[in-house]
Amino acid sequence: MDGLLVAGKVRESLRRQIPVVVLTGDISTDTLRRIAGQDCLRLNKPVKPMEMMQAIQRLLLISQRVSHQRARPPAEAVGPRKPRNLRRR
Image 1: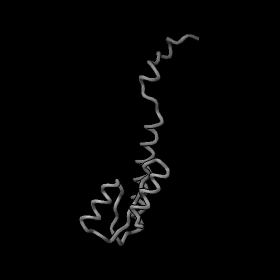
Image 2 (image 1 turned 120 degrees about the vertical axis):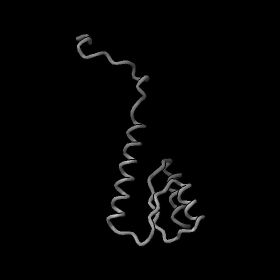
Image 3 (image 1 turned 135 degrees about the horizontal axis):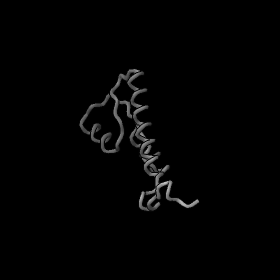
Image 4 (image 1 turned 30 degrees about the vertical axis):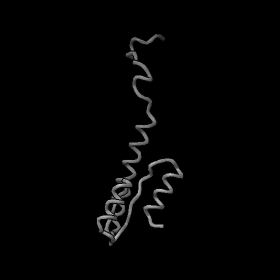
């Protein structure tokens, strides 16, 4: 089982699209398509530590934004808000 299969199984098990970084030396067309098709970030070996840290930070920021967007109810579900000075006390 390769990393892409593991990532797919973990995502399936958790029922969420967790961020995945694939470190690879394989630049074949088939591998690049598989990585892109599973919405994973690809880094080519050898990877510099700073490059890896930046990739992880980028994915975490994206993941946090998506989580916050899902957590917020749509504005129309909440209803219009009255201006503060018009609310009853």
